[in-house]
Picture 1: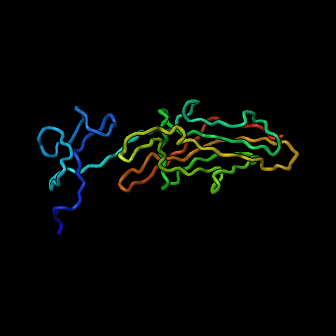
Picture 2: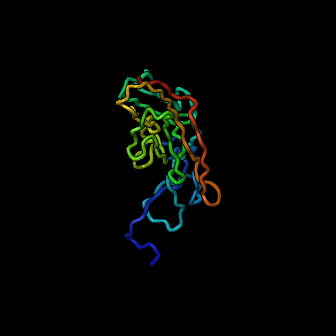
Picture 3: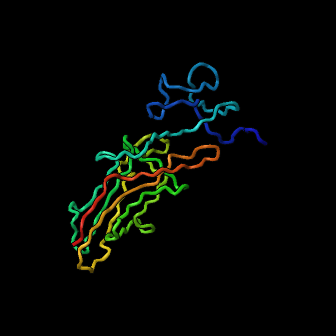
Length: 213
């Protein structure tokens, strides 16, 4: 009948407010929308109101371009020596964050991805199994929230990717050289009238090189 009837369920919500300190509740001096015009913030009242302002909780995360340095976006590897014996493995880890250590923006629609490339084909990537050496990126978040969208913790490894490289020619007795670089295709988000994605390319200036012998 397109009208509320007694006994029907409804969402009993307070007046919308900006939760500046992220504690999940309204505090004095926080901005709010005065739906009923009484000049003060009004909590949920336990009854159905046929004329009210509907709101929802949104978290806005600021994220910039990757920042490359030893405390932000960085490439690490194990073992520490880049002179590898025959049939050895090399584990390469990449952290992709902005200067404030936030995960960078990335989306599946434009095909955003992180790629680890060994230029001389002496080492072969094995991870991820579906696309070795290429990690597809989409909506990376370091925040863990509870069911009410309140902050619980920050995952420092949310933007960390690891790949094991193996000797491409394990039975060969000839020494070989290798050089590994890392790059990414990223998108800051949909924009314009039709929500287009504008990708940009980021390449780590540092590379890893060594020998297999």
